[in-house]
Each structure stands twice: as C-alpha cells, then as structure tokens.
Amino acid sequence: MSLSASELERYDRQIRIPGFGVEGQVRLKNSKVAVVGVGGLGCVASIYLVAAGVGRVILIDKEKFELSNLNRQILGYQSDLGKLKVEAAKAKLKELNPEVEVEAFPVELSEKNIDEVIGNVDVALDCLDNWETRLLINDYCVSKNIPLIHAAVSELYGQITTIIPRKGPCLRCIFHKIPTVQTEATPIIGAVPATLASLEVLEAIKLLTGIGEPLVGRMLFLDFRRMSFDIIQLSKREDCPTCGETTS
Image 1 (cartoon, rainbow, N blue to C red):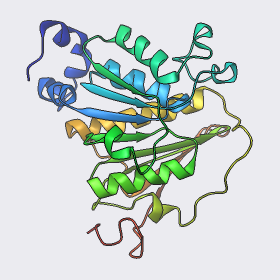
Image 2 (image 1 turned 90 degrees about the vertical axis):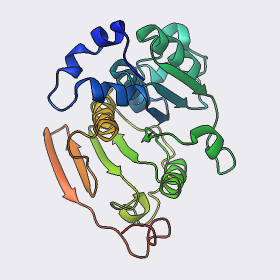
Image 3 (image 1 turned 180 degrees about the horizontal axis):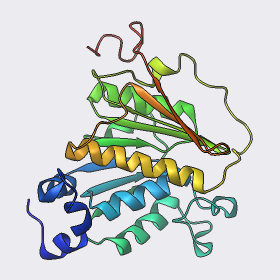
Image 4 (image 1 turned 180 degrees about the vertical axis):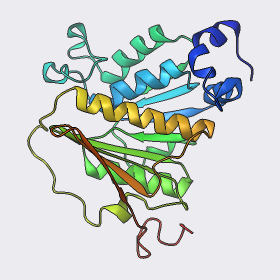
C-alpha cells in the first residue's frame, strides 16, 4: 500500500524523522489499533493515533458524555452531553483525518464479545479506569499475541508500561492481586491523562514502525506534584496464570 500525495504532505514532519521515513508511514497506514476506553486517556490517544495516520482505529466504550467528563475528555463538547462517547469521538476524528478509518463499538467488553470487537488488531491501548476489564484485555492480548500498552492515572500521578507477550511480564505478573475497587470518582486534572495518553501513542508508533525501544519489562511512573519521572524494572512471574507458560 502506497501513500497518496495528500498523505505525503500531511505526514511530512514525521516522515522526516531518521529511521521513520515513508516506510514507517506505510506501516502505520497498514496498522489497526484498538483504544479501549474513550475517557481522559482514550480521547487524547485516539486523536494522536488518527493524526499520525494509523490506518484503522477502533474505539470501544459503552458510556455517554456527562458534564463532569469535559475537564479531560476532550473529544466531548457541550453539545455532546448525553451522546455515546464513541460516536461523538468518531465524528470529530473523521473531521481531523478523513484518510483514517475509525470504528465505534458502544459496548462493554466481556469474554463473550472481546474476540469479535478487538479481533486481530496490531496493538491495543488500555485507556480504562477499571481493573476487571483491564485484566480481561490483558488475558486476551496475551492469548492472541497482541502487544498491549497499559496506562493508569489518578490525581497528579500516572503509570505506563508496554506488554509484549513472550517478551516480558503481563499485567497479572505485575499486579498479583486486583487493586481495590474504587467506588468514588477518581480525582484528576485533564493534563495528566493527556500526558500518559501521548506516551501510549508514542509506544504504539514505536511498536508499529519498529523504531526506538518500548517499555517492555519496565514501568514509568510520573509524579506531577514533584515533576519527577521514575522507571522501575519489572519481572515475569513463573507462576503467572496468564503468561507463565507462554513467556520465554
């Protein structure tokens, strides 16, 4: 698949990056990425995936926009209150870049529908705020050998890691127990998920084009109160119920 004249012009600045080039852009055009959760993380992530020219972006979220979303979920406008997030987001993303195919799935992922919804994507982005669905996606991606980029945010903090099955630990290796379920709304400033979402997109682009070194086996913690960024090494659990027998 080649690039049109308009695509060459649209993506000119990233094509100029050493090691990226037209070949890297063609790889993005031929790629399919799932964005699971169209909230503070997912809105920003989908914008930059579409802007970068990822050929097919799948949006998955069952919720509708509420007023309290709008401090961070920037694909939701005042006029979108009460509308499905995936549908409102899809319309804006198509305006941003008509060269990209955007699919909207207003569903809650489950074991019954995950294969139909996510299918054979090249990369999945965890943009969720609940651990039950997050671990469901982790298990699915490991079983299908799909790279998964995890990010989570709260208040002025965030974390991100990249999971490549058989090359590093999965989420069940990192989190031995599911974190306590949060019943109250997570306090958050919009710029925090925006920053983590941008990092998720960078990790995705690196994986899709083959440039750079992804965060496999490492987790980046961001503390915006102190403006400190720290990386810790992660280890695979040999007894992990998801990847213990599949990771070399």
